[in-house]
Image (cartoon, rainbow, N blue to C red; front, side):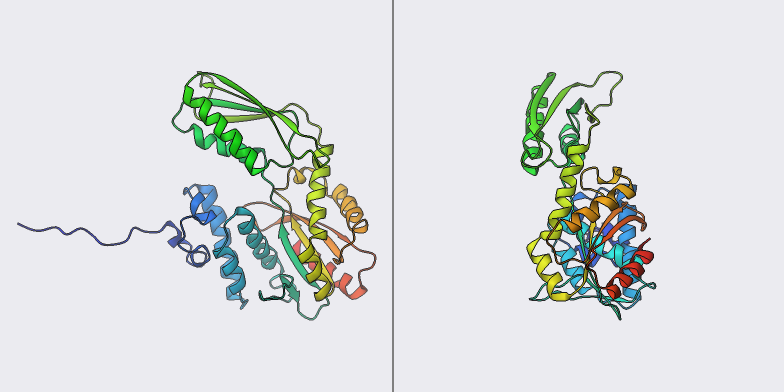
Length: 331
């Protein structure tokens, strides 16, 4: 009788299809990208973009060791997005403006140094947990329950704290477990900023014939965004005065700060000309060592993005000229 031996071949890794990206993620199951991967088309497009950016920059001879290490040790989406934004900016500069990545060391440095130009670039990402993060957290708890849930905010929140997301998610899960219709009320937000605490009502019931089971819908009672955008400006302005980044800008010389803010509240909704005026005011009204401030609004799968920039009146002429070259390359 023929004997069959069990295969010892290791199961395939879905990240094998992105050979340049895979070492950046490593094998740690808790890595944010591995933990969230579900094989959806959207996720595959995002990962393919990262693969293409890494491959293109490596092929051009750039040393990405420090960026790979930063992505490999990432424990939050904020950290992953920081690296992704740096690669995105570098990919746009490649072939247009000579540059090099600065290595990580005991003394913090900006991310990029232009070659032959008196300018450095510091790149960061301002991620705020928002209504969609609450929706996703609750939707995960609804799988297989047959419930439909509606979340209603009195205003669009600029940020919801992680602890608030966990608290509301757990309350919904407990209510759904009872199996009866429910209504929860509460408040979210940061009352110390411009926007006061926002009322949130969450209702749920077994899905009816005109509802999708295991789903969450969201509504906002008020379309007013004045306080919301004031908070978004605060989140961005905080990057101008952040101690470590300010000190490294002072040590490095003229530095442009680029803040990617596609996921900073509803920053994307404001027109470019309005943002430009507000960035100029933020830069002029803040004690900072940065000579220019740029706001980038990037998509998840495209290499193109909106860029709005403000330059300090004290920026040296040669650095101003370099910033204009960078702006042309990025747009």
